[in-house]
Image (tube, rainbow, N blue to C red; front, side, top):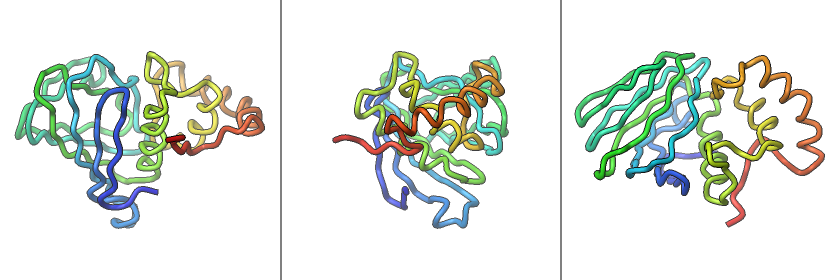
Length: 182
């Protein structure tokens, strides 16, 4: 479980996160992360946080956001807020590393998701679209269903697939949290 000061890196995108405040320190009210995003052609999958508001305040550089079908550019000193349930993703297409402070309210288990997701990236286990192995998805998807979901396929299709495949995934050694092999 992440704690204040922990640092993780996504080897696929180069994003580094430093946990400033976690759910443990804020009684589940706030997860605050310092994020550094170098230029990357790799984008995260379009997703939602079903029950969490998220925001990003850019300290330096520029971040590009795709929110509900519209691209927005957020520059140093600007902040963007994303309501719960709104499809989005973000990336840096500029040469300067983008430095931002991200917040998630309430925290739930999104910090654990980031730890697992970044560990999968570190071990080269994300596909070209940034998705975990197919049999890893049911267990992570069920554990983090209130934290984060991809927008396609529809949620009910994902949920049914997760329920059906979770026992197989578990028997084959997959778990809802992934720890890096390195």
